[in-house]
Amino acid sequence: MIVSVALNAALDVSYEVAGVAWDGLNRVPAGRHRAAGRGVTVARVLHTFGHEVSAAGLAGGATGELIRSDLAGSGVPTDFTRTGRESRRVIWVTDTKRGTTACFRESAPYITTEELGRFAADYRRLVRDATAVVLCGSLAAGLPPDIYGTLATYAAEVGVPVVLNARGSALRFGVARRPALVIPDAPAGGSTPPRARELIEAGARAVVAPSADGIRAVAVGGEWQAHGVRFPGGQAQGALVAGLVPGLLLGWSWPDRLRHALALAAAADAFGSIDIAAYEQYVAQVVVEPPE
Image 1 (tube, rainbow, N blue to C red):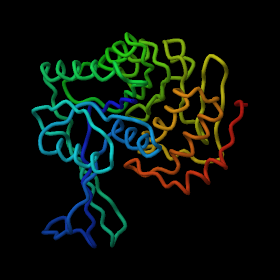
Image 2: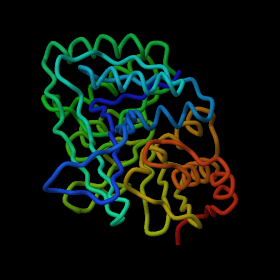
Image 3: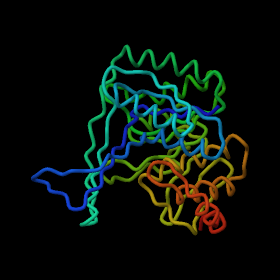
């Protein structure tokens, strides 16, 4: 079983209005609710491709119940630790007349020390039966910056490989615990992400990162560049992370890992739903070769 951890799971709520009145009443049809967050997306994509997976992490209040319900409806097992505060919501309002969309993102809930302790106990129970752990996405408020490093250590203690997707201090602390694979997230504010070789020297065993026209892998055995299909970036990062997990577990060659992951990212929507026909088309288009 693959455990995908979402420490800041969210509920996306989408509305469509033909002409938004920003200074008046808008009557809208029922909104669409979807469980979201990077770790949730990873779990959804892995489940789509038949992998045994569990979405774990933190979820609270009525919003947390809707997150669980949506994933259950998609067939994705969940093992979230309940928290006292409501999980965050991300509200999308699309004006179909103007062709514009506004996003309203709630702040992350605060996690208490007691709640973190309960999650840590739940997590250590889960990793005992795991084949891999995916640690990715943003952190809820109140969580220590070294939380991914701690979770990676717990997994290492029972011999479970870790895939880490993070940025900033969460990335730095996590990399120091020697994860099997690191996918650095783009830093906030448009600053330059750490170079792959820097992450290898800091402890990562392999690194995959977006490049100018695709994705690039750096590992002990060499370097590879995958291109021919554009990496969408942004919300597709979760699908990219999910696409790299099977190759790690099954020992695929790096070209096969990158071909699958890039095609998957290009064929995914923001919630982790995959257009299988598009995926099959993209797989045939991806070219993998040593970088120039």
